[in-house]
Image (tube, rainbow over all chains, first blue to last red; front, side):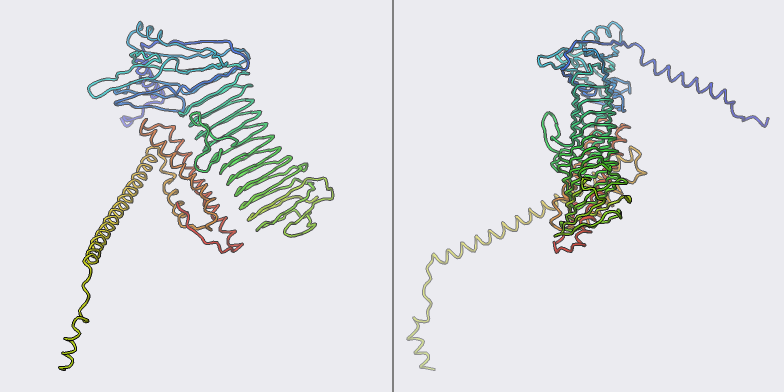
Length: 433
Length: 182
């Protein structure tokens, strides 16, 4: 009698949970019943130097009026109507796979629900996948086929009235639609992607050029040859390997593991086909975090308040930079720097470096010379420099009219450092020769 | 006394003032009227300007209160209250507003201050998106990133100002200082 309120054994709980789970699954599947799926596929042969231009699945026009709720996650965009029934589901990810064949293939999977299977089939017949090569060797991909927009309206006395408007103006009544697009392109082809609606692009290896004009979009790429990117508010742009990249970005995060040549802020940001500098400071790159593994040649053409981190840099050329912070794990050969208010931290400078020229103001400079590095340092004290020399082997050779000349070791052919700075802190670290 | 009376009678004409030309009187009169009119106009203009200033300040204040309320609502909606973002931003902005720098450095610091304005515009993008689409979980991640970047930017501005003033003190130039307009 005492064990009257004994809890249920674990097995029973699991069984109960399973029943609840299966019931929920059954109910959720009920709403998916009576819908038809069709996969639209088209493949066309293209020349090696052709260009594919694609929009994003989330570019689909949505026109709504009434009680509508959205469920927008990273990978899908769903619209619910008045009775909370799902009406639109767009798979936001655009997966672009590359292959060795000279064919572009688009696969768009469309699921619809109208009320009857016959109507579903008739409706699906209205959708057309139009993929062809233009006169200028361009292939324009529309991830949403010939659909112009999805319209939905409802009010207190009327349930959801939904229809799809086609590009030819025709309206088709519909209860539910789901769209998912995949692309396959030749590795050698040039690819251009434009979009601005919190989407994700996943890219395979590409030998041709990749051009990105994106806002609020994430990109996950693998191996690229040439990358041209205009990015605004793109928090995750990740590539494994890029031969050369030309990036203009505002308020974005870019991560590249290995890159041959990287040019930052050479041209203004492209917005709606118009090139313009970032309005607040007229810089072509601003408020962006660059995280790079190794880079052969880093060119910074125009940068305002970016943050640049690289594990290893071969050559570095900073033409015009304000307030940007450079954190370099290892510098191998040269650094030519013309900047203002930019802090530089070289955690290690290779013993075989050849030349470092710095012109800067209001900044902190830290140079850590590799063990057994012999070099010559010329310090032009323009206005005020706080010089902390922790390399006891570095000796002052001459001091003439605010130009100080130091040397470490006896080999005159060793690397040279020339620093012209006003209002700076210079910290030099090095080991005994 | 009699002599004095006689003298006055004889020289009566000399003591009488000459008749003034009517046109001079009219000129003076009209000028007085115009001056009155001008001062009334000035007063009205002054009042209108005052009302306009009060109205603009009131609208500005109301908008800022509304903006802060919206900001707090968005933060609560995305469960980001634990980070005290609004408090951190306000504290850092207030601290910056108290700072002053040499006048010749102000233009360069503007680069960073304008970036701050740009970021505020970005927040408006998010609120517009939320208004249009309702609560979306992934926007919470974007807002978290946004505040992290904004706080980093405010810290950067503070560091740069401290750096400027550190060297100003070392070199001791007599450049006049101005407040940061934030």
